[in-house]
Image (cartoon, rainbow, N blue to C red):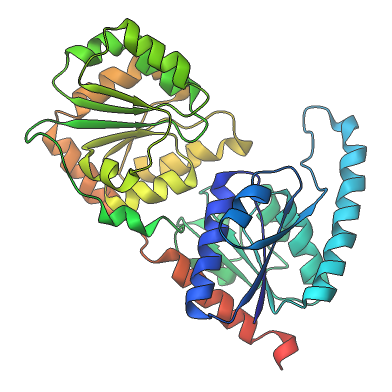
Length: 361
């Protein structure tokens, strides 16, 4: 079997794509897998690191703020579609898998036009533009949230959840008995508002009797570490740009502060972690707020809006982490939303679709 996988631009697209590829390899060790990405984007580095071949397209996103600059975008889109058609003729995939992003739009549109069945994977609670455009061409659409028939044909939808790092379940809980632990996740690059809120509240956190693990992201580590040093290097607060031992860090956390990206929320659900979600306002169609509200509406998480974070985030966290009843309620409700073995379930759907490919009839 030959599988064409496309998508990227952000880790939120790349990680599910690689996870699906890994699951396909487990189920079909002889599988041939080719990725299609966008030149200059993160996937061109991350996918080869994961052991897969990738071809880059000159495709770029549309400039919504300055529409007159989109002439070159359209030219690159046309070039990308022609290039993908050549790739498909050479590689002869049995099925295409699109996970969202610029490259996915060009690759899956071309595949569908050439008679290749395609499967889409939508990570967010508010569907992305690319997948909404492709919905009528897709044979199956794997989603992470309920009620996605607002965006996609109901008969194509399969609720699989988002692939997450399965080793997260193997974490060991190691901390002082009775001491609460607050885990603050800024992502690989960092979340400015979350970091500024924590920085402003360092004296208050230093006086608390909780352990604080503050992951700032590489873009903010110098600022945050300087603020921690200026606060007297409080022993109960750790400052890191990156956490290499995430399974253990999650295991020891009583409460998590995080953005509301699809991968982060899927991990929180899988691990049953009480959380305070601070959706980023800097994403397309405000999809992080939609992701967060899917949990908040089921009393499975607490929401602090980005604009309110400086004043509300730390006071909310300090009150919540001592509220055993609320923590237990959040744990119970968020655990109900977990989708286990998502990558494997998606891969099984991909293989079933590949087996129905016209090239095998």
